Length: 91
Picture 1 (spheres, rainbow, N blue to C red):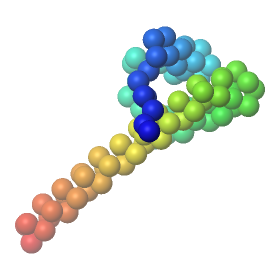
Picture 2 (picture 1 turned 90 degrees about the vertical axis):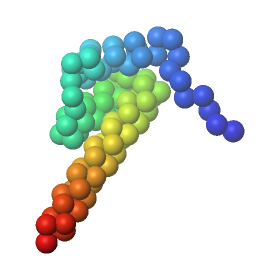
Picture 3 (picture 1 turned 180 degrees about the horizontal axis):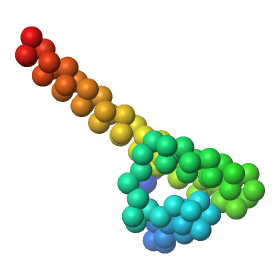
Picture 4 (picture 1 turned 120 degrees about the horizontal axis):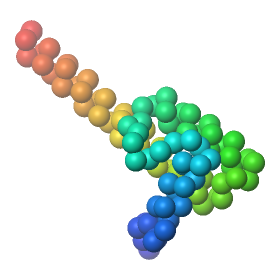
């Protein structure tokens, strides 16, 4: 049976509060690069160890970071493949 993964009312607000206040990251104005995700995860781990972030919040943010990095990786692979295909057509 599959869980309903939709955000509950207020959950996104809570995550935004956590990222703004504890991690120093604004979700509204940032385009993340892999180094940004590394910094966010480092701050998240520290905040979790200090018990400043609830377990569920830490899990959610970790999952989002992992998903975002995976998406970036897929885009990079597509771009590399496209470049290789174009070079193969020329030769």
